[in-house]
Length: 283
Image (cartoon, rainbow, N blue to C red; front, side):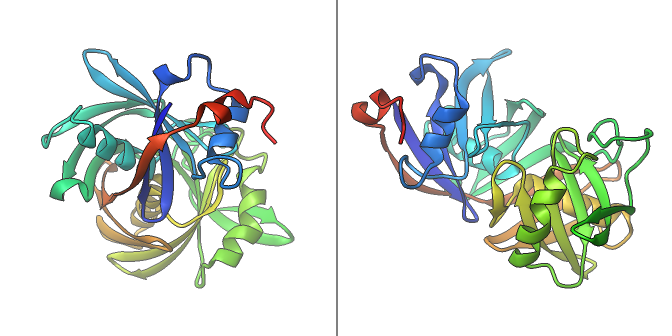
């Protein structure tokens, strides 16, 4: 079982080939791969399913808790770099299929930057989903840990909850993120962004990621946070998102289609040992 490890602004993923597993991917196996003490260690697993639908590469994305994600901006950028490294794609634009929909991508600057057309953001409660009447979920109230918070929600193939605050930090994300992720408002759970508007073209974001916890960076979270900021009139259509791990540039069209640009770095490649593969009892 070959593996390839990359990071996107400190958010690391292991890329593996579905054909190497020889069985349905289990939550336990994903958790063991992601475990830094008993496995390789990463923030998730990107599974190369191969080409489907007229040769379009197919990606499955798994969180470190074993759950499967519909879409991940950082994961997509990493997988695109992997495809480019393996010479499966070239320097031009190409399509990629994810559970959260198809995207168009291009690897630039010798693999160091990846541009992705992430799709269209929706604020519709049914699409996200958020419980209650069908509506655009903008500036609504929710009680968490004795606090009344104002949130907006969005989807770009996966769910997001966006909260604007003057002083977002890791402590806030860790304190409020878990309760928001699993709140009954969000039947599929949700990613959570704590956002400070710096000016018309820049925001700062701290992230609690569904199935992963506090994370240094997230591409889809950056898309959602920038889209909500633009929807509410706080920011222009081009937004530089400052994350704990670095910056992502977001461009928003008039109908809220999103283009994301961010960096990727290759860390390592290798093989999972036969001993580890045979140890199905884990710890």
